[in-house]
Amino acid sequence: MTKDDLIKRILGSKIFTEWHWFKYHFDFYNIGLEHPFSWSIVDACLKVEERIPGFAYKFMDDLASFSGIEKHLPHYEQILQKLAELYVINKSIEFEWEEGTIFYLEPTIGESNKNPEINIETPRFIIGIEVKAPSLIDHINKRTANPFQLSVRSNQILDVAKNIHGDSITFPRDNPVKDFLKSANQKFASFKTLSDKPYFSSLFIVWDDYIYEPVTALTAPYSGLLTENSFYKDNDGHAVKFPNVDIVILLRHLQNIISATRYEPLIEVSHALDYTHRNVFPPKVFIPVNNEDKIPIDFINAFELLPLNSMIGAEYHPSDGIWWI
Figure 1 (cartoon, rainbow, N blue to C red):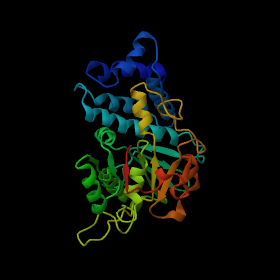
Figure 2: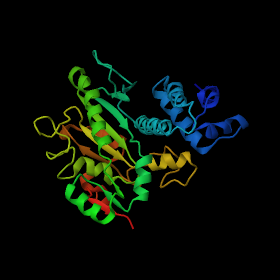
Figure 3: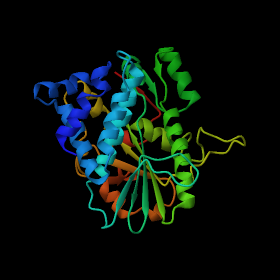
């Protein structure tokens, strides 16, 4: 596939035959020019296409499908989810994996039709990758408007905040993190059981700059989803576990994707889907969930990861609440 082939596909898609959030960006191709945001998407698709044939057309068709309703915010947020997937998948194919490594797009196994984004099968093991990005636009607006943000589930802190600010409080955005873990745990279950090689499962959560929100949702001592005091409990009052998820990766890149759609300045990156490297701010962090001693070093290196517990900055530690001044 050539770049011209992909552009022709885009220009004949629902991005142009129906209302679409990105018509403006891709319309530059009609006059022989290229918008930087469109370039980042097309370039990533073509790179992935080299390792996963058929990816580029499928991705652009999926992206174009979120169309037909003018300024429909749910479509915009679904598009952000797709771009988060592209951001991670594009990085996965850049690494020099062992010879014989094969990439599988939306794989299934056994009788289950649940699938992660991709499997990376090396001669020694298989890595499953699931990518999630939360719907944050409404939350961002509330976070901007309200003077206090409750980061953790705490009735005591909430009572104090209400006495000061009334109802002008932004509540934790932790339910999406719980749903991401539940979904990934279900998707990886069959692969863990039926794969003929050791199967390592990873959940990537792509957030905006307020990375303490998922950090708190996952690790806060008295409510974190990965602690014994998790707010998500079974019928017997015990913390629900996620045995089929080996590792969670937190990437604070969603703001750059949003900014790129608006043609706003980007932070520490050259374009919308620029993953950068380990020594470039902000760090990409991981939290072991299961089988910590079996995390493939190739996986850590491929995604330029650092352990969350090595981070010094306050935004990488659980937060109780924040008064915005």
